[in-house]
Length: 306
Image (tube, rainbow, N blue to C red; front, side):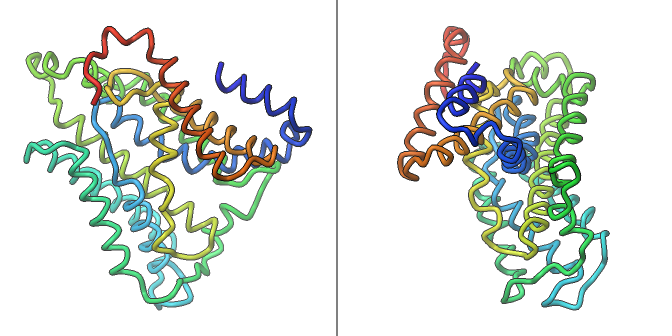
């Protein structure tokens, strides 16, 4: 309802909003936040939180840019750099979960520390000047636009489909929701809860790393600031769509709707010429109203606000 209302409002206030080029611009802007939100959704459904998004994406961006053909270093492992980066992101996510579980620390604190750690590692690996990516197989993902959309958007659509199938039809997807609903009951039933938690953070880490790869494809360079700005839109989009921080609610479909709401709101405010400071205020107000409306019927069940 919120998404439909925003589309109707901006379509009536400006003629350019409903045009095909602007729709394509919205999908392009939503693609990378959607990939991040996919990984984050599995973590949030388990009633955990992951703040390491920007750090992992930045670290992945730097690793890719210095291990593939570039203008600064002589290293070039070709497209093997892509699985290397994804594995690094996966391992970082799994490490965060393992520390949280076995050291008994809140996931918020652990992932906050991991965010700072990976940002530091990215700065340490940075070769001193922006490495320009020379391998066109990477930059083509953003440059080539069959039917008006880049390969990044098509990749995002495919990932959304796979993630939705995983959520609905696999044990991992069902357990992610069940852990958020009632973890103690699962533990007493003999379910290996820790295994599913580590898997969720690992999947999330791989998604953040993929976001870093795609950011490199768009800009054509490795940048230690590449991941900045991913954290807030991703968490806000998930919560907007109904994937609650308290766990057990929402899912991939809801988070994707949240991404579209946030991106549509920003695009529409730009289209009508709203002041940038006013944009931030309106975004915050819409988030509060949307979350309050979507969780009102759950207020008796969700007694503890984390």
